[in-house]
Image 1 (cartoon, rainbow over the protein chains, first blue to last red):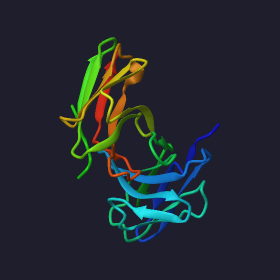
Image 2: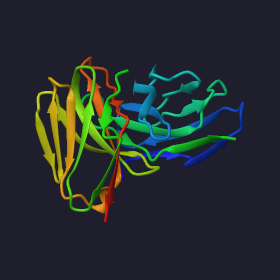
Image 3: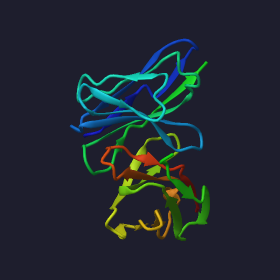
Image 4: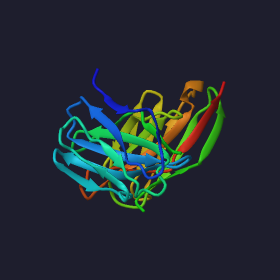
Length: 112
Length: 112
């Protein structure tokens, strides 16, 4: 089945550590996105990529980094510069142009 | 902020009743989409309505769009307990950027 996979489902990080969240899709979608969701709130865009080897900052990119070396993969690194990283992170993909997004099931990151 | 806002923030109804959620946004759009999120999961795309459309149906869902008022509504008819979830509207800007801006969501509870 085609879909988008995020791993791990739960992640615990010590303060000062970098962690990388995985996002893989087999939908042959061109565009991929990372969103952050805090409790009771909507989604805020961290980074997005419309094509391999290219990505753009979203509204809250500070303290995060991404890469897009392969069409299928768009990993997100939460760096130690992110002051409040505890949140639910959602990856999505879409075919460029009009259309809905397909979301992964999310990674819940907790700083301990 | 380009984020939309849903109204109400929370809605509780009896099974079998209709549920109506509203979304307001600020900028000109290419299309507006509605998503559903079960607790702790990713979002699921429900329906997309283009800026030149006024109403769209999909099963028990009915979406309206009023671009002059920059608002949309989602109606779920004959609600079921399984409809309990958060519902988000998302707008695709007319600028051509392939990003969605999500609202803050409506938490719907359907009581059996």
